[in-house]
Length: 114
Length: 115
Image 1 (cartoon, rainbow over the protein chains, first blue to last red):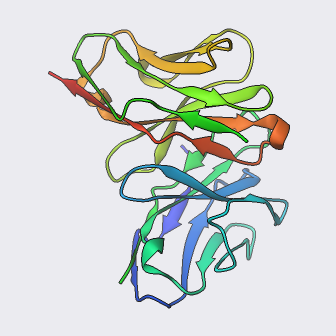
Image 2 (cartoon, rainbow over the protein chains, first blue to last red):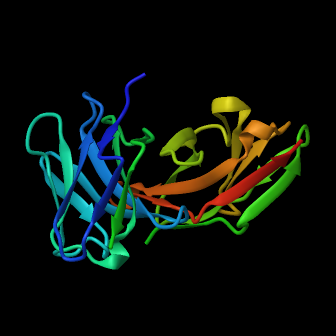
């Protein structure tokens, strides 16, 4: 069964450093998303991406965050200057064209900011 | 704005008994509704969805959910719980009138099934 792949599984970084979280969505999916989950609780929407541009973003997704699809397979989330409160599990998701489809999530990247 | 509420942080049920995990939603137009399950240290897995049609939808692992428009609810059900159903369950809503570009998740309900 096709999977969404995320790397690394765990990243530790110092406050103020830049991090890039990587995702490889399912190959025929065209809609991509980043969510985060803090302490195994609420899953928060960050951003959606379609047709090489951001479709929608939340208030969490401020100027410190950016997304990119640098080639035909990868989808990245960059945090320019990490803060302690950015520590969370970050999930990438993708879905097929057609508004009724559910998402396929990756296994996540646990980001720890120290 | 779309929102979804899961009023119970935790649901406890004995194996073999029926289970219900509650969800209510708020959207401006017709909702697309979803349930996902998360096992420890894993991503969310899609269980089922309601888009249109029959109010009772069936999904993976014997789960089903009932859409009730008047009560704006989409409760997850299973006739006979298994210990292996113990996990974190998320209800989610997609507001198509708002463009459908994001899906909002509830806070999650932890299901414990005791043997």
